[in-house]
Image 1 (spheres, protein in one colour):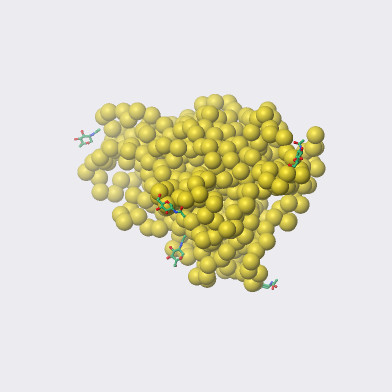
Image 2 (cartoon, protein in one colour):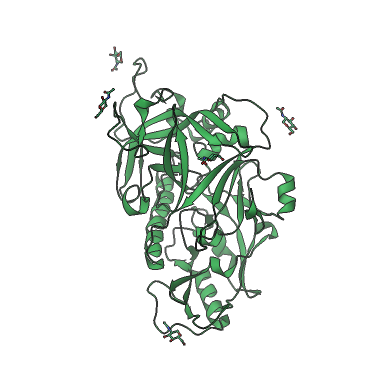
Length: 454
Ligand SMILES: *[C@@H]1O[C@H](CO)[C@@H](O)[C@H](O)[C@H]1NC(C)=O
Ligand SMILES: *[C@@H]1O[C@H](CO)[C@@H](O)[C@H](O)[C@H]1NC(C)=O
Ligand SMILES: *[C@@H]1O[C@H](CO)[C@@H](O)[C@H](O)[C@H]1NC(C)=O
Ligand SMILES: *[C@@H]1O[C@H](CO)[C@@H](O)[C@H](O)[C@H]1NC(C)=O
Ligand SMILES: *[C@@H]1O[C@H](CO)[C@@H](O)[C@H](O)[C@H]1NC(C)=O
């Protein structure tokens, strides 16, 4: 039995030795730039709410599983309802695949096919491992293999056998799962200086069996895998961190604008001092929850509506000793979810302050909807969050009011009813901000002015 501390030391050691790059030029200011494509799988906000509810139940039970099994590799198996996608170019010659970008999980995995002659498969429908000269599964005895969960009951690892691949299994709370070989491969990425960067030995799950609603079907939206952007050591930004800087950032542009502007995911050195100054970036510490090391937690201190601080007990925002509570920034949830006592206060304040007429008919799933017909520029109450270290996150009202029907706007915030869970700032609330997740400095930065970048 490996103790937790020796395992974490092992992981640290592995991180230091994880990546070997073909190209060793000085790229401290260079960063990788990946286009984020938005595909909305929802025909209505009510449907978005039902996808969110499913995702949160999976995220919350990943947290509970982690508490039960106390294994550093269980967390991260969260979920993947797809809305933001990145293109990953994998293999030699490169194959292009579309992955769900997910800040709620760590593993990078793609659907793999073992076809020898794949000419009757459409390109991009899976990664054709046998068509790549640089693909190789990790050996089951390889130390990397300890970074992923294995199928149960585990297959015996035969150290002396040459071909004894590292098998992984990621199972999601709703029974969805992906299993296959934990492997390494070359990936080709675009850097900010316009050059292509080839990175060898990206560790990823080559999934031969992929079943269940979280990883197939409508919520997956035609993707071939997940790019885990979580905080764990096997996530995509953690693996690339040594070369490009241990941070990543993104800008989610308002996708209701037509044509929708391009959103980007940037890995590495965007947070240099010039950019921070130019874009007046604000920061708050990233908090850690030992029970869910993959998630990005921030600390909310108070909430104001139209400048008035709401009487919410500060303990509502903290992570308790059993790992419940706190607030997570998540790219895969659309709406924002606040713990019940905070939600009640926010709703009551909005009801008091809103000047527009309440809609005649209720919208299922939404507690406050206003009728803006005939109002050119509807004025809605101003919400803001005061965060730890006194930065203030003040989103525009379109980040928390959505149009659910013609000229009907509903408050896009929901209560978290269960005692075991956390509050979530979803992707709608994040729109229009440059958001930076800086793991070395353990801080989260945001700027209203950074999205004209790069
Ligand atoms: C890389 O360049 C930066 C300045 O751009 C410099 O401070 C640093 O020492 C260089 N590092 C190496 C390894 O050359
Ligand atoms: C691959 O399959 C196609 C059609 O299925 C066939 O025409 C082609 O000859 C095959 N190539 C090889 C190398 O077997
Ligand atoms: C491991 O593999 C070697 C070579 O294939 C074989 O000789 C040996 O019996 C195997 N050991 C076990 C325990 O299966
Ligand atoms: C990389 O950059 C080139 C040229 O700027 C562009 O055509 C291509 O689509 C980019 N690829 C990705 C995966 O972003
Ligand atoms: C919204 O207001 C308009 C004009 O006052 C009215 O015709 C319409 O029925 C209202 N719709 C709802 C759902 O309240």
